[in-house]
Length: 157
Image 1 (cartoon, helix red, strand yellow):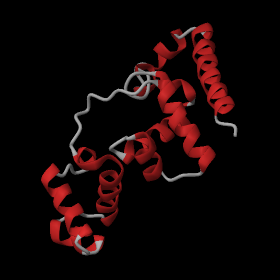
Image 2 (tube, helix red, strand yellow):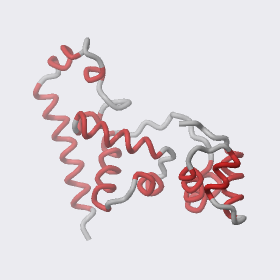
Image 3 (cartoon, one colour):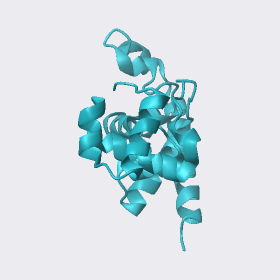
């Protein structure tokens, strides 16, 4: 995904607030999708000017947070965009990638640093996955289920 400067984002928001359509803004500023303009606008409205700032990739979310985000999205049937806005995650694709990891590799993948565990990334390391003891796998699964249960208990009306 192309990163746009803070200035471009601010200009897009100002143009929108001035009454120019998101489609026109995207065309004028060379933005492929008007949805980006609308996301910037939503972030601006919720977080102010700081919502438009470019974040570095220093954010490394833990598995419990990822599971919380995905569970909330599923329970409330919200879009990736709405969920990202709620949790102040600047890149909507981040949540989509977490969902993909969960769907392909299970809960355990959410609890590894930077997505999949090393043993899941290459054919060469598949043998390493066999070294992962059954106890370690069950502990990780148990931890994920406890987090999910706790979240579900706290989210009831």
